[in-house]
Length: 186
Image (cartoon, rainbow, N blue to C red):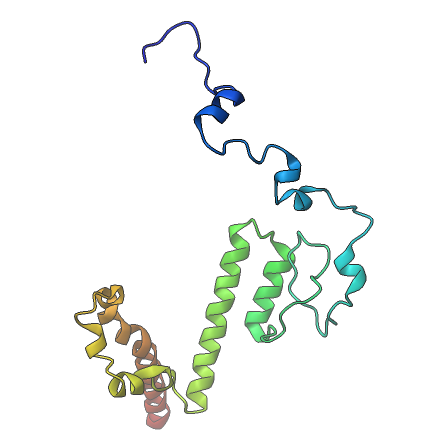
């Protein structure tokens, strides 16, 4: 369409749309709209959920975003924060809004600290993760055969898996052997 000084009507009138499109405008009447009860504003003086249900007891201080004034009625307690990773998590929730990248980066760092602690705990208890994480099932349950001819996307980075899984263990073993050799030399 070439430019003209007269602006064309962008939206046709409702009557024309009803004639042209079957079913157009069926939800214009609020009584015909299924979502209308949810669109009504709630009375802020009456919070039905909080007045009828007793909240879950908070046994220890939980992480709570600074945007929220109180905990939800039910919250997870299966993995309470502990150690250094718990301190990082608490700092992240206490100091930064969920809209800030620092909040999420600190939570990722806390996860990495927790993973490193789990790896160290596994080494001390002599239950190394590479064995527990599926190397035995790879051998016994057609692990190699399932990777070829299946057009799996993880085959592209499959060569990296041994480096990522076993590499840290080899590095830690090398450090322990080096420290033991130095101690033995003294």
